[in-house]
Image (cartoon, rainbow, N blue to C red; front, side, top):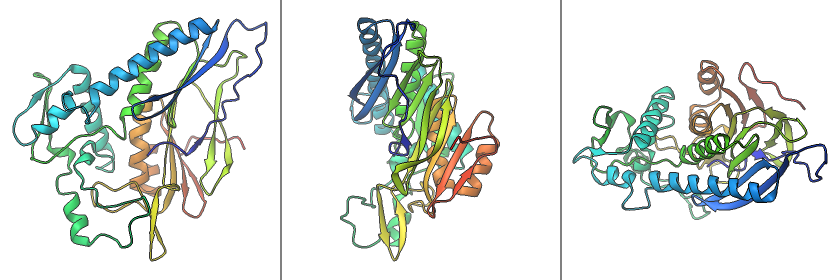
Length: 328
């Protein structure tokens, strides 16, 4: 889940200054089953509304492309034909799946595009009274495995090797939609803005006063406070957090983010925030780092150019990648 780890302190101007030709406009919409805040700079409300409508149409298009709820979508057809035959898909979807498989490899399966194959045996709605059995946990991930996604670039086909396998875009789809909406608005001449997909944030340009957009990293142990401000310059920031959805057994906190390799919920981390050029990449890596853990997660991030990370452990400790700086 990518949502509550970022306190959205945009420092948006509420007063319009005559010396600025651009002003800030924002709309909140329900898209892809969650809340999107679309913020643009524009000369007037009419232009801003037109830009926001363009972004909304693009996000809706992406949802139709990657939806596993729509029985007629290409993603659903891939899943229906698992273990049977390869499915030809549009180049856009093929390329997205190819990138997701690459990130699955990069994170050693901590992020796995086939996570949708997992049996949902963990409940984080307060109804669980006992842990699932070890056998049930092991059984829950038997169909998970990105190595069984067979891609044929020449024919643009996707084949899931085993029956019962499924791919899903829950940990990457909103970020991808934010990237596409941002690219479209830039192509239409929008000089600055923010696409905030329930915490998957993607920014470009500057505020009309010339300042960078800024976000604050929320303290997951006290959501009314933050650890510090960071300017976001034409990039994305995504947080994975477990401080709202978790269960406690024998004094141990188990996050709602499940390790697709083991079937067990992740432990030891309250939130992992990733900064990247693209929201799609930040989205997937935030999940991967959360599952990998502090040491391995930061080591992996430090090996990837232009990617930074902040981890807050379950004791409230802050761990940062090598090149990140926080303004308190």
